Length: 323
Image 1 (cartoon, rainbow, N blue to C red):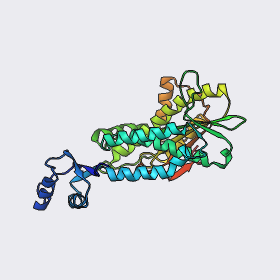
Image 2: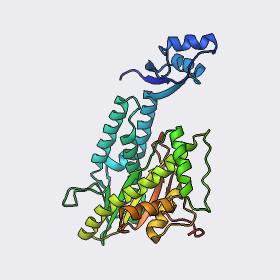
Image 3: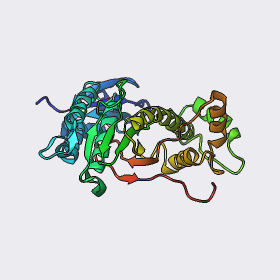
Image 4: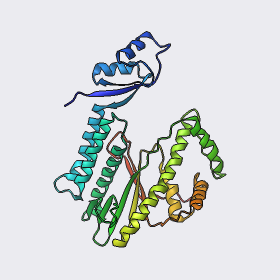
């Protein structure tokens, strides 16, 4: 087994700092802001990094990845490929997880998008496998069902019909720049007059708003894409469709998805939906015609640094007031 390593980036300058901090950075081969080095992950290295933690950022540690893989294995492997697994093509999903781990490792923690997506799909697999209403159902991962080769993440044969489940990770990563905050100042003029979206420009304000705005765009994008495949699948065999949006709870909150779900089901925006007027304008301008054939939305919450999900909300609907 290769030795454990830790990859760090210098984010601050030691100028006007105590001399020992200069010496620690020099010993770690960090000599300028933005420099990235790979170091042996030892107690001595960790101790040095703690002493200059205000000047560096840990990007990746093989021990953290090992712990994550161990947790994911304990949580999902038996469900996917264990004896008695009810997941058809579960081996495909598990192989995708192993491939995603390799990609993440090769990138030294820089490319984690595929790993996050696959683990979210595995979390939904566990939800389906443990659902008492589906104990006798056959759960198929990405089956070859549609004539044009397109796939739906999960097709569950319930005997009388199919259950179609699509899983999408929504993880915008807006940077906290002046430009991002300026976009907020421009867009807030289009919010409903009874809605106040408050962010602080000194505390990631532009990034917080940018993530919320981008998430809403992704809800529309992913919904339209699933609608097309779901329509084709329902022509082959009827059954309800569920679109599961996955997030950590930081970039966007459940209330954001509630606003989208209410608009989708009711055909009109909530009075307290900050993005309602802008979305209405965009939908009309682009001539978007939603099929509204998705029966339910769900939210799977999982901190991206852990394999185990922390919550599932189904179905997603907003509170009665403000509609």
